[in-house]
Length: 188
Image (cartoon, rainbow, N blue to C red):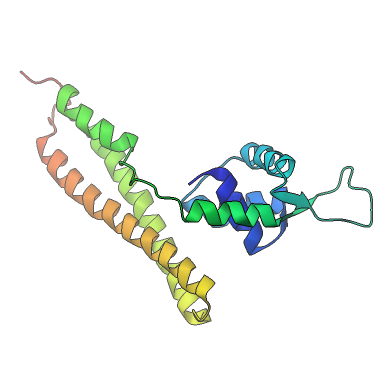
């Protein structure tokens, strides 16, 4: 996914100012596609110059005031084009996996196992949060197409966090057994 398409999606859901967009990224889209506030504002300018979005007209001068943006027809067309574009699945690129592999070379120690436990705790918290979102959404009802699609994205997040929790439990058990109790990372 690319940031311009994430922004177009968010603006089609609801016209927003840059500040509102950054808050929405922090609360929802940011769970699976992150961007800094500066990146979002920079991309808004590019999208506006490309005439894919426009600032909503206001009755007062905009200097110093928030501009709210909406998607133009060309922006919707671009998002539709991108949605239908063929794309190859991406390989997992996660530094934690690389760090685990590196322990095979440098050795496992209690500090690294503690780091795995920290990751396990964070993924467990995120899993709880996602499940809370699911309960909230179930209570609210899931009648529209938008609701169902957002539910699918949320379910994907739940399953991804379940993967991490389960995998980290196994990694902690496996590496916790092999770590040298003396703390020597290169026993020979």
